[in-house]
Image 1 (cartoon, rainbow, N blue to C red):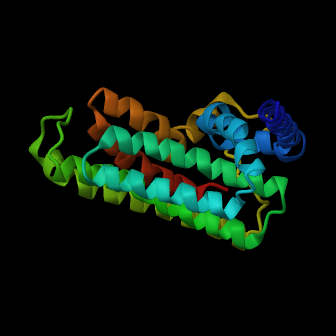
Image 2 (cartoon, rainbow, N blue to C red):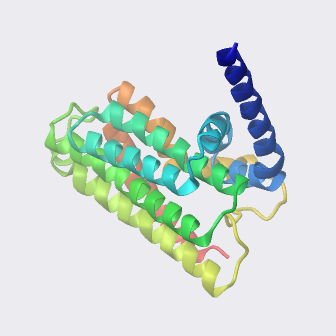
Image 3 (spheres, rainbow, N blue to C red):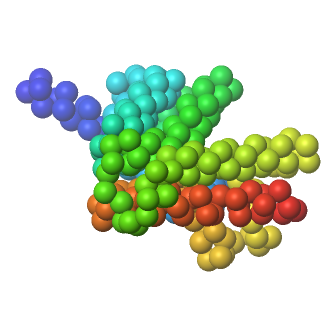
Length: 248
C-alpha cells in the first residue's frame, strides 16, 4: 500500500508540475519565440523537454546542474564525432538540445538568474559551434565513406567544416553587436516585418544553425551523405553573414 501511495503521489506531483510548466513557464510569448527560432525546437525538442522536465524538477535538480549534464552530453557528442561515430554524435547532439531546453524550463519554474543564463548561453555556443567541425574531423581522420568521390573534398572536409563554423560565429557576433549598439529588443531579430511568421521566414530560419543541423545530421548520416551537410553549411554561412551585416 505504501508503494502504491508513493507512486500515486509521484504521478500527482508530475501532473501538477506539468500543468504549472504549461501555464507559467511555457507562455504564449515563449511559444512564439520557439516558433520563430526553429521548427525543430518548436515541434520536437521543446515538447520532449516539457514532458521530461517535471521529473528533474521533482528530484530537485537545479537548472545549473541540468546545464552541466547537458554540456557533458554535448562534449560526448563532439567526442563521438571526432572518433567517427557519426550517428551517435548526431543523436547525442539532439539530446544535448533537449537538455538545453530543460534547464530553461526549470529556471522559469523557479527563479532564473543572469549567471545561469550566461552559463547556459556559453555552454550552448561551445557545442553548437563545434558540432560541425567535430563531424568534419571524424569524416576526415577516420576516412568515413563520403557521398562525393572527390579527393579535394576528402582531404579538406575538416577545414571546410571549420570555416563554415567560423562564419556561423561571425554571424552571431554581428547580430549581437547590432542588438547592443542599436538597442534592439530581446529575442530573435525578425526577418520579415509582419507580426505573423511567414512561410518564407520559417524556411530561412530553418535553413541554418542548429535548427537545420540537428535533424539533418541524423538523416544525412543514415543515408551516408554527411559530407553534403558540411558543404551545405560552407555554402550557406557566408551568404548568411552578408545578409546579417546589411539587413536593417
